Length: 200
Length: 349
Image (tube, rainbow over all chains, first blue to last red; front, side, top):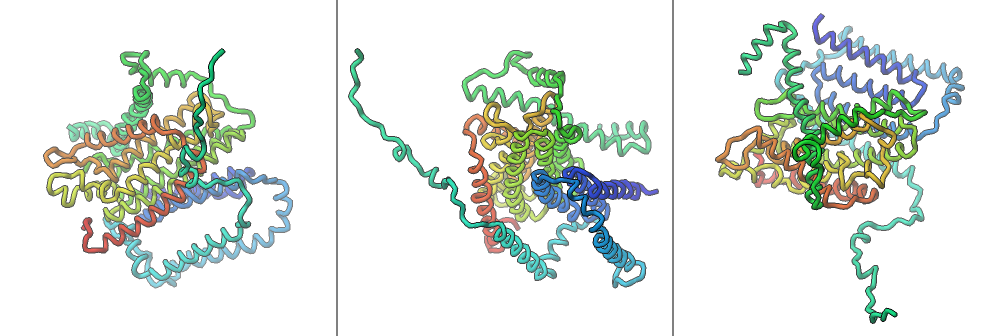
């Protein structure tokens, strides 16, 4: 067995195990941590495919930012596990259907390679070329409109998320830092000149 | 000499030699780094002492030089108390989560053209990705301690770290735009070209001058990123309860090792990205590894200097600085540099 294959199986084993633990762990924080491990292993698998930009940005975006916010939320939630488990059997048929559809879709994509549905083979990385640069060049030339469209959709999502949670100006005791910085000593204190009193 | 050693080791280890060779290189990076971490704490206490007209540690060994080792031994001998109700596994993993990224990032730091462990194309992205994992140490330490103070402290520090990561990331985007590369070695080499460098005044060609606003943003962001004074919301000996309030002994010390290792790492990055790495500041002196060490030392001194100088920021002011000042500034400067590069006055051809 080639060394690369061994690394692949090692990463995949961790990936599968961590993914299983995400749905079986009782503690939601443990589940989130396993998800982080799963992302990390997936990034390793991608790095094996020489997709270094994708692998690193998976860690940078998902592990470094998204999962941190996820952990924030999960840690602050007061989750009662028994209450969640109550509805397990009634949700099972729906869950099973969704799962089967996903398996079928994945199977179709996987089989496409064997059945020759795809027009070309998977592109091979050019040795010595930086695929980060190639990817950037493609995004900003051939795929600039889809890329701009995706970013506009993201912007709309950000605005919508803020609009949903915004509940109007609050009556707080907020003070403007800019105003605080501008304050000078003579605005706040007044030095009085008083004749010295005699000590008796 | 290196070749002779290589052949000698190859004779001994045979097929596993590449593994041994890489391990040897890792040890050669990590061991001086840990020594540097230990003596950075000593240097910090000395420098702050001098700035405050005190003497600083001077009892253990000549001029107090054995002090960091005495501190380490003391912390090793202390008991590690695990609070009742704490999530034991995560409680013990959290310090490692904080420390390990600070070491792993050194894999791609170039010491000069040839001296580095791993040359990968996207090494700047790698450093950013790996250092962004360090925040888990803080969150997990706060959560697993089963203490509300630790939890709130963890949230506070983690929110601060991700906020400043954005401004830092934008500053780096500008650097990679002008260097036209994500490779740290190429970024250094690109700083050795230009009008001033050709006339023997290399230090005026480094990124700090044309990208001065980004340099300032980066310099302040790394202080906030490493949770150092004046942005030390995590730890303020007597006033603020931070995420590591339940930690003791070596588990506590590892958080501090992580903080100082991170300081050295971000100083090295500042030296490489903005201060020309191993390049010599003037034409008549040769480029060398020692320039890099000198620049790292200068940035580290800046860390200690501002700690002794500035009072601590209030938390809402930290957030305001990060989100309302730095991020808009970076966005504007990104566009400015973009236009500059497209104009006939482009200096980075």
